[in-house]
Figure 1 (cartoon, helix red, strand yellow):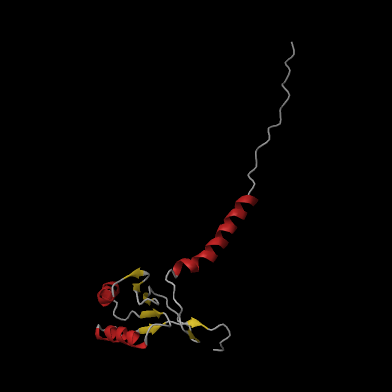
Figure 2 (cartoon, helix red, strand yellow):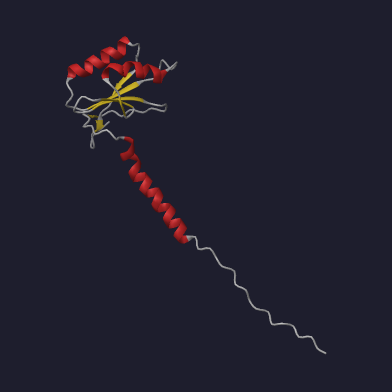
Amino acid sequence: MSIRKKARQSISMPEVVLTPLIDVALTLVVILMVVAPVIRSGINLDLPSGKSVEISAQQEIVISINKKGESFLNSYPVAREDLIEEIQKLRGEQTGQPVYIHADKFISYGEIMGLLDDLKVAGIQKIGMSTRAIANAMV
């Protein structure tokens, strides 16, 4: 009696193709890079132009004032009367933290000076005014 061995069947292992996965991942990265700046500045402001650029490594406190005179604190609407109190809550013990003002260029000088005066009276010493960078400015 002879024992026959069964013919071995070749079993093929499925392969994972990574190329489409990498394409999708890189596409998502590009989309996020394009959309991120739009998400950050949700308030429509027309900033005045300037040559200097501000650099900040810490959490920013930003006051924004749009054309209609509405005040925002870090993109959240705040009544003008409550603005100083809310800033002091955000700053806490960090007395040296700067406050930046983003104001539409059509806001009156008097309104901005009133805000600056209120900030100084509240003990805020470091105040920055933001501008839009000029494309062909020589620094």
